Length: 78
Image (cartoon, rainbow, N blue to C red):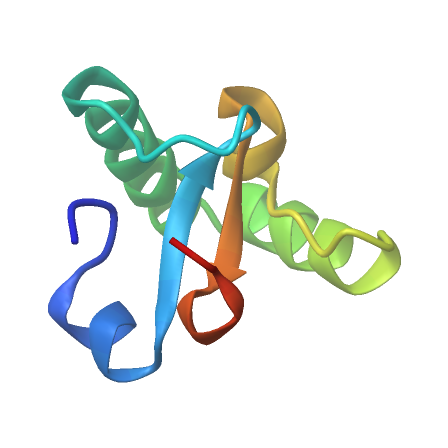
């Protein structure tokens, strides 16, 4: 249950590293910083939104830089 915020848990999604593992503390902090930088700058946010719309894997700028992706937890078999 480690790589999801309360809202993400309600929506049954989880953030994972490219390797498929749950995020460690450092990667979680980097992702949070990346999101805050993205939210603070309109140009960076527009670039990130454009990447999510145009790319097949729907990764944001922060996800591309750090190497993370969202997973539907309902489809994960533990």
